[in-house]
Image 1 (cartoon, helix red, strand yellow):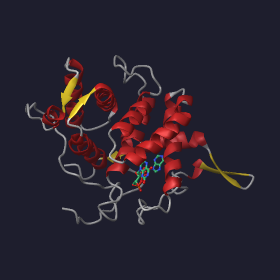
Image 2 (cartoon, helix red, strand yellow):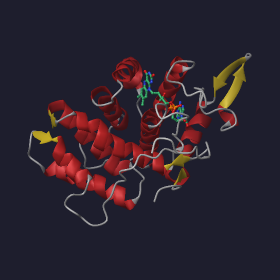
Image 3 (cartoon, rainbow, N blue to C red):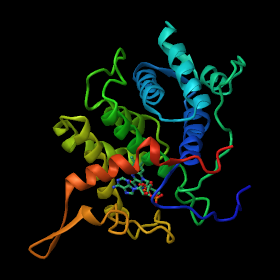
Image 4 (tube, rainbow, N blue to C red):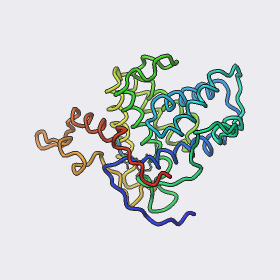
Length: 265
Ligand code: FAD
């Protein structure tokens, strides 16, 4: 139903139901517009599945689905993969036990005051913040994959995915411009966490007051002082970020321990 009631949520939490709804949307809706994957698209999708299968701090049933998808993609010698085959796997047509991804879109931390606002793009930002934080806290997680030992692995994967598959083409163009400008300066997993935070705030600043802003969720420079007072400082009367505090806050906010299972069923 599209007219569900607004549900109260806590802005200091991340919600698993948003992340799982986002993965459902990505695999079953967004990807469906590409009938076959080959070449750079296939490579991008493989990297995306590698990153989420290895780093997503999700429920066992979802992680198992992602791992199965990864094993299948890696073992398959095909140069072209029909989307239908990916869909069959996402829907667990093989009936492997203990493997499942919701087919329901339900937003909680990402719910909007109308169905056209927030939702999927919000969940995608959230997912990639979670993934950069996981990569920084588990530096060996991508060992023995094509993305091993690269502090840029998650950001590059996001960049490729957004550029090639994200339904908002305009967004992809903007993100690519930001990436070209400064992504190569990122030298560590911690810097990757901060880079994504900085760029997200740049997008927030650009979009403040625009059509895509939900009046109930005004674009702000995040985290706001109520969420992280020590992140904010003043120097010569001007606002400055304390980036050490911001990094510590991001690592806590987007950690597995701060992901609430509320409304996952
Ligand atoms: P979002 O910006 O989606 O943020 C989701 C949540 O992340 C927030 O509620 C907050 O809890 C947290 N958050 C906010 N800021 C930060 C931060 N700096 N660091 C860490 N966490 C934060 N829309 C356009 O109209 N034009 C564009 O060019 C455009 N480019 C985009 C590029 C990308 C890569 C993505 C994923 C989305 C883009 N969008 C763009 C969509 C837009 O950024 C928002 O996602 C959408 O408007 C929904 O906004 P929101 O209020 O849910 O908050």
